[in-house]
Length: 208
Ligand SMILES: C[S@@+](CC[C@H](N)C(=O)[O-])C[C@H]1O[C@@H](n2cnc3c(N)ncnc32)[C@H](O)[C@@H]1O
Image 1 (cartoon, protein in one colour):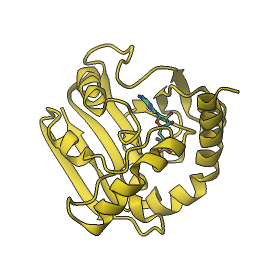
Image 2: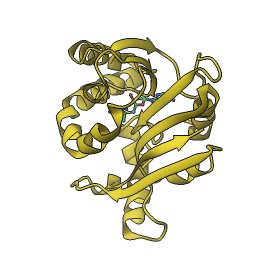
Image 3: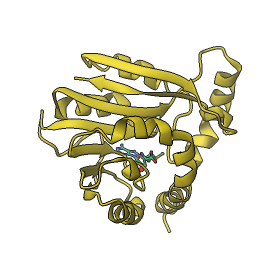
């Protein structure tokens, strides 16, 4: 089996397996926002559907997910949580969605993994209606010069190799601030987790 497909399959299993843990660490924040989203949303890098429990039942989710091994657990979660699922096997950098057609886009733990986060954010801006929201939850780079940033820099290559390109030291907060949204609100927090290199996080909303 090709290495890429093998890693994709392993990651799909790991992510599916980690859903209960992610619910413990991210659930309260997601619950506070996701239930109020409109009836049609786009989710970039939907993975195995870890966000589906928090959407209102009946929500139509256009799931942008290029990794095919994620699709089976994605469908299973959609069935379990009564999500009307529309999977698009494409990259967030180039979405086959109409300009100005979407009221809300969600992305969780995804800007760390995409090849070109600036292009993804410019696509998000393109497909959003004026006044539409991008809701995000991301792990980010620790402050430059900190011990944690040193650790992230050191672990970056092996981490990226086993996680299909996840960048531990990406300045996603700055990318969001500079992407061209009308307004960006974000809460920066340190996750209570033993996975030290991914403790700095942001959770927020960017409005077009
Ligand atoms: C760490 S997982 C997060 C999955 C899910 N959002 C969650 O919170 O559990 C990152 C996901 O982004 C997807 N991904 C990677 N590159 C992508 C891209 N360029 N466009 C869209 N999705 C991408 C991966 O296939 C994977 O499903």
